[in-house]
Amino acid sequence: MRSRVDDPDPVTKRPLFSRDCAEFQIDVPGRRMLWVLVNHFKSRGYGRQSDNDAKRLRQAERVSEILKRFNLAKDWVVVAGDLNELPRSASLAPLLDRSGLRNTFDQLPPGADRWTHRGDATPSKNDQIDCLLVSEALWPRVQQVGIERRGIWASTKKVREKYPPLPTVTGDTSSASDHAAVWVDLDLR
Image (cartoon, rainbow, N blue to C red; front, side, top):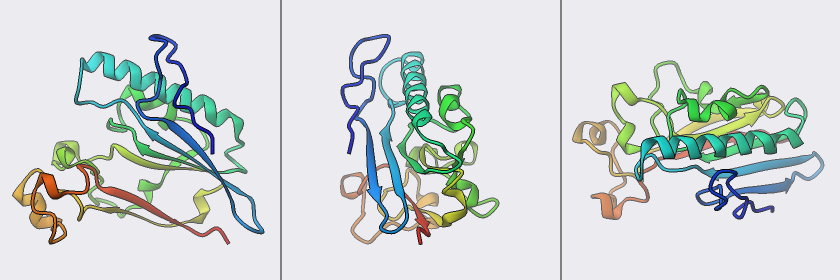
């Protein structure tokens, strides 16, 4: 495990990552290594939007820089986490437009809801802010991808009717998170 919690922000000189960009090296017996980079980018909800976008851009640039250590055509790499912005945002472009990295949500059925934050569960914002990106080498091993929404209290009754929460989730205070859990099933045999 490698932590980057103290990586300096080139602008502010304070820590760049809101939480961390932890890197996990997992030995897959008899095969090769699986590398997982876990992120939580700057929130959209606090502070000035321009400052948030600028910091998120620097975070995406840093993760893209870290990925240069890998050969994404050969190495098994996952970039996961709450990127806190819609994929079409310019602040995420250095990461999401990176060659050799694929968005597992592209495996969802056409027309499927892609939202992962309860505030984005609208037709105009039906997009993910939580991501599971995999290297080109890992892409053929993606079996299934999904979004588990039962642990959140959705923002509207209409959404809760479409995606009923668990019986114990009766409001904001009993929800697991305001984010749905995203998952990918990989065949590493």
